[in-house]
Length: 73
Image (tube, rainbow, N blue to C red):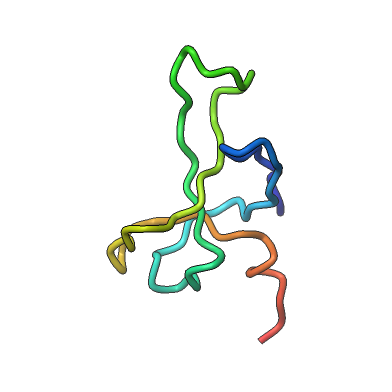
């Protein structure tokens, strides 16, 4: 299953519906869902934010991009 979420930079991304530990998700496919502040110009409650900069702990949950989950191994 796929959920389509707005991003924090006015785009849309297809994400998996389950969170996985960060160690199981390659870096380019890591996303988090976060709530927007009340005064945000974007008319939505939750946006997808790419996990970059500070790497999450290996066991920390992240939402993988759907593209990662549908690629055969």
